[in-house]
Structures are given as structure tokens and as C-alpha cells.
Image (cartoon, rainbow, N blue to C red):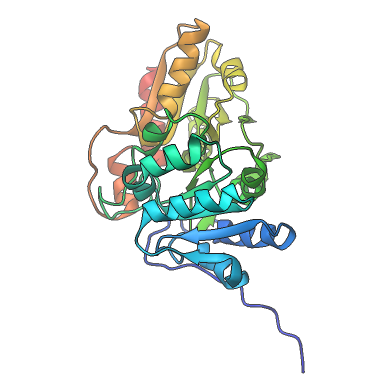
Amino acid sequence: MTATTPKRLTTSAMIASFADPGQRTASAPFGHALAALAESDDRIVGLTADLGKYTDMHVFAEAHPDRFFQMGMAEQLLLGAAAGMAEVGLVPFASTYSVFAARRAYDFLCLDIAEPNLNVNVVGGLPGLTTGYGPSHQATEDVAIFRGMPNLTIVDPCDAVDIEQAVPQLAAAEGPTYLRLLRGKVPTVLDEYDYSFRLGEAAVLRGGSDVVFVSSGLMTMRALQAAEELAKHRVDVAVVHAPTIKPFDAGTVLSEVDSDRLVVTLENHTVVGGLFETVASAVVSRGLGKRIVPIALPDAFLDAGALPTLHERYGLATGTIVAKVLDALG
């Protein structure tokens, strides 16, 4: 009998990918990273609220069925059960859509998990504009909702590299975390920039003398693409990737912001309460008096439709970023 290579599980195609055509991707990086971590740490458990296939938790469930818990369409129960597991020494990763974690189960996360500072890792799928399903599923304000919660660490990963490296660090971190999950076929970008994810730290991916981009999440990929396009216009752009929104690495970011260059923030989140306001607050607190140009989603309920169309309409596409920067430079 010959040995066969185990089948690598993929994810549902029901939810569109924001990856560009022909771009390198990794399938279900969160699910595979969590399953791999569980091989060496028997405290790891996975839970979901009827969304295993849609948050890549199905990969973990296949690998560790005895440590997987399907809680049904009950997000409050999901987080309450995860809190109880953490109380007895387990390290739960609880997945649902970001809209349900932020809007529907906030109080359970706040009082059952954050107040006692338990090691529960909430994994939120469809953050920002990563689905065309409309306001019921577009978590455009999740960071704004969660930033005010004490003890909660917030991570907005760019790509598969960030996700794969973040999972073990989130498990090891004290207290609760919230990961804005990129699921399905996730672009692989940061391995080209001598980059490693470090929880709580920002990283300068490239230097530039004219403009500084400060970005998080999938917008770091767009920032890098826009920097390449702007070089054709003889505009030299630095890119600072800030995957941890809270606690925020103000030291690294402000060391780049404190210059004569135009500062632009880029985020897959409403302009209210996210990265732009985080950076602006740090700038004002330091007394730098800098102008900051935000590239973010509007303070509005967004349309439903195809992701490329929506990214163009709401300013997240590379071309619209380039145009806005050129306009700001005058």
C-alpha cells in the first residue's frame, strides 16, 4: 500500500476573495496555522457559531475533531463558552463574522472575557469591505466598537504571512485578542519585504522621501501596490505596516510621521474610530501638528455588489489611492 499525501482542505468559494488575478495566495491560512499550533499545544480549542466553513475553522475541526465545538447560531453562547474554557486553562479561538462579534455579542466579550482578562481569541471574518453582501455582513465599524474595550488586543493582518505568524503569538498573549480574519484564498505579500509579524509592533516595509503611508490589514497590500505606481510619477513613498491597532506602536509610526513628508493612512474600515483616528490621536498627543490624509471607508452603510466595483467606488482600489495622493500633493 503506497502512502498518499493528505488532502489540504480549502475553503468555500461562496464569499469573494479580494486577491488580484494571478496573485500568489494561500488557502485558509488561519485554519492551517491553528491546526498546526494545536499539534504542539494541547490547550488549544476551536469554537464557532455555525460558521466553520466560512471562517476557515473547518480545517481545525477536521484535524482535531475532539477539540472543536460547534455552538450553533448563538454568538453570545459562543463567547460565554469560550470564557468558561479559558477559566479552566484552555486557550480558545472562537470564530464568527466580525459583525456578529462586534454588534451582537459585545457585552459577553466585554464582561465575560475582557473584564477578567481571559485568554480568549476572537476571530472575526468579513472585516471591513471584504464581502459584497451589504451592511448586514460588512463590519466597517468593528475596530471603532472594540478600541474602547480595556484589555482587548486588536490585530488587522495584511496577508497570509501575518495570519500564520500571528496565531501562535495571539495564543501566547495574556488577555483577550480580536483578529480581523482574512479567509479563503488570502494573498501572500509580506514575504517579499524581510518582514516578520511581532504582536504590538509596526514595521517599515519600504522607505520613501515624499510620502509616508501608514496602513493596516489588506490596505497594506494596496499601499505597496500604490507606492509602486506612484514611483512612475516620480513620487517616492514609504510604507509603514501597523497590524496591531491596539496596543498601538506609536513609537515606530511617529518616528516616520515626524518629517516633512505627506502622511496618508490607509484602512479597510470606516474613517471613524479606526487607524486614521489612532494615528491622529498619537500625533496630537506628541504635539507634532501634522496634516494626515485618510484613505478609508465613508461613515455610511455601504452598497452590496462585486468587490472590485465596491473597492473602486469607496476608494480602496490602487488606482483611486494613487489619484488621491497625487491630488493631495498638488
